[in-house]
Length: 384
Image 1 (tube, rainbow, N blue to C red):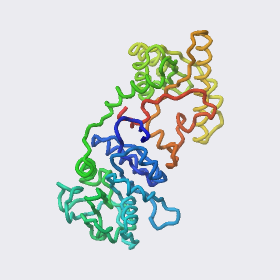
Image 2 (image 1 turned 60 degrees about the vertical axis):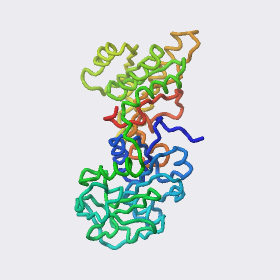
Image 3 (image 1 turned 135 degrees about the vertical axis):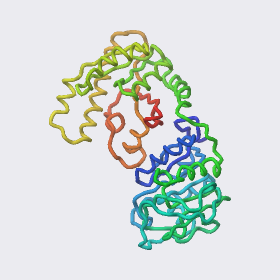
Image 4 (image 1 turned 90 degrees about the vertical axis):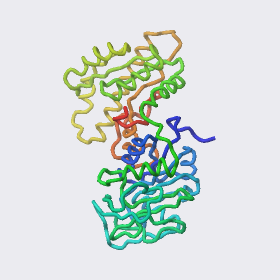
């Protein structure tokens, strides 16, 4: 039995080779109407298979495939019979793993580059013969693997794109995910819809009914606190959980002394009026400002903020338990407006690069007493 992903939709997995391209690729896949998730290059073939993917995209990266310690891929991934697209570094990883050759010729291409389509194939179908693409590479695929057809070339790169339709393996040296590549989104859509045969049937609206059902299943008859900051993310996550469990939810707004003018009043009046949620406001201005006094390191600040938020919620939890006395239902759940970029940037929990620890991900204290409810964890900001 395969492990269920965060959505009922089976994902296209974007394998992250250590650059920030992976998030952008995942966004482009979602814009094409297909659900996507990011996994680190350290994920094993078994871990990838457990996510039951409908496609795999190998991202670009800053390394050379020949460097000691360069990011590797479990080559058994290519035995999973899943349609796969390699981009830039991922293109070279694929070529090398499948028996092609990658060479450092010293002919680096960076920025806008003229590419010539030799054969359209499935991947480049409907695209002009001459087109502008965005390159960023020093190494290049000098020989395609056996069974692969060369689809495109540039003045310095004889194998700029290739395909093996029988195995549903494809690759491009350029970056189709960036807007600088004239027909980049068409490359991604051709891979998804034509090569992999995936319908364009996912959008962020699909998440609402799915998450309401998931929250009800997770929470049951339990009582829930929601961390309501007044921002879009926590406002939406609170509304979703309120839709799912109604009066089992109490929203908690922490005034930490660093708010925008009028923000507290807006939450206490407008949000409560529009949703009907019960709200408790905690005045923690002195606590937060004292804890942050003299601290200049951003990572340390985030961890202090994460800790003090949780301490505030724990105090509310204790007060509500005392208020309810013998109602028999503990307050075990805490709702957070955690987004997918928060998770990815905080290291993803699985070995991706830690850009910064968000206070609601890497900044949480180790002695957390709550079970987290995070209905937005798979979404980007605009999707929320």
